[in-house]
Length: 245
Image (tube, rainbow, N blue to C red; front, side, top):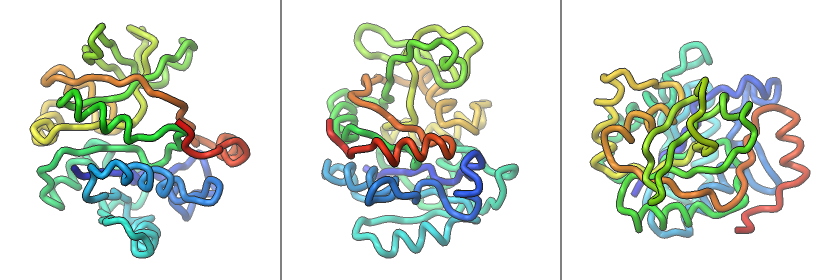
């Protein structure tokens, strides 16, 4: 299994902090956000390579970080230099697949999230289900449902549908940016793009894939801290205590 880290964004809401520095390499406590994620994932023993997809503006930062790391990390530069010319998450995934000729199962994660639970539990869940998988968490605030990906789930955890930023949410289940795709479904990503799948948000691929394959959804066993602006970054710095679940 390979782990693909989506890190080609420009984090404009965190300017000036991220104007010339990538958000996933910001420190939370004594580690970078990426170190928290990758060091945890590696304890599963299931991942034999990590691919960080960067834009051209920040690629050198990631390469310097990777060079000082003991994990098998490859940095892929998608060639873009501005937020306006970004490829979008789904096209970035396909770009990495094409560049590295990937034919493995893929764990795909956003590189800018801090978690208080271990992603090894999600990997074990996906291995048990033996299908492509997502995670989900319950969001009681309907206003927030209009700003994220919302899933429909059946009683057996089967993912029935997913919609990005719905006008009329079909449930209170939100889908965070952590995904597992079986190799057979990875091969269909190019088909999804050609079929008109949205390419900016990674959840758009889930929305397409669950209509063409079998996916399950694991309830998130803890909290996710999305660092969206300077205030939220400061709050995480003050409150985060590491992986406790």
